[in-house]
Length: 364
Image (cartoon, rainbow, N blue to C red; front, side, top):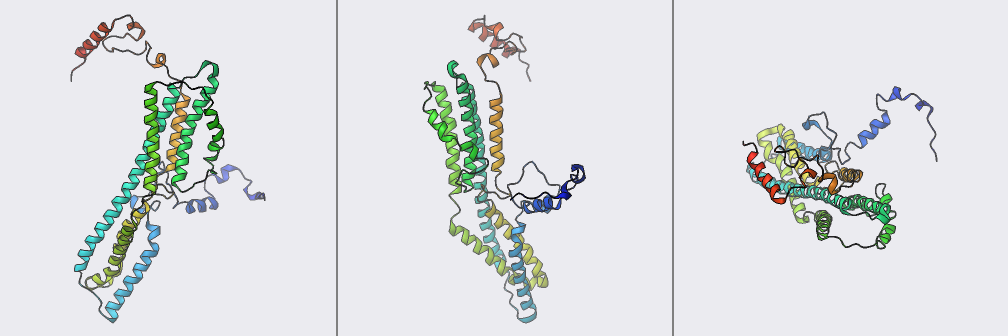
């Protein structure tokens, strides 16, 4: 069914472009707590007041329950029956809770950091493979156009690999995605044509370079899969959650004798800190999701696509284009001669000029 146009919306753009409509404001609010976050966007609010990326929205219900529990304990202890306990447990349990949260946070951030390193490795490997193919793969005279298109196809498949890896890490196993389906639609055709190309034995240096780069790509696949499929052991997760909540539930009983009615806000402040640290570790444990604090995989894929497009947009480099040029002053500032001007000299003369250049270099 085609929606009907609203007559009220037929007005000049200048009349409504200055302020967003209520639909846009509602959409922005709905996606405010959804990520990944835009690294190019910086909030004007102070860091302590920002909610985008904060775990505070997930703490509302636990804090309400904690406040109700602290209120009940305080009222019973002050009005009905004394239930306060010695606050020596505050120190002992506090040390255990701090140790547990430190372990949880450091483990989660280690996984987050490793995920970022693997994607940086993928960016580097795709750049190296694209440069290797674009520069060193020769275009034969009898099939120059086909070879050029084949090189472009290979470089585009590097982008396809990054996009496919992104969806795999987000538990999206299919290919019917807007950014992936157009790249995979004719993959089988490309694979069949690849076996029909005339094989030319590459040099050992080319084989070595391509092998290293392809190994880095495979390392990224295996490494990210290891992070994704190796969560924190369930025993640790349950124990840390139990220790945290036992400490929070016992806390009002230890504070009521000393703080009185101030036990309620004091317990809420302590619970906010403890639960916040626990939720941060839980939030960043899987760095490949679509939450605000997860890695911006869409941005990394776009960076790979942009870098490869820049490589393909440049001219094919040859020795004459960047080495055999008189504009490059090889022995500056000792002399202004270029490549062709120095071809007539012998190797001994060139080595002597190199030694003279060292002696003529300015000293610190």
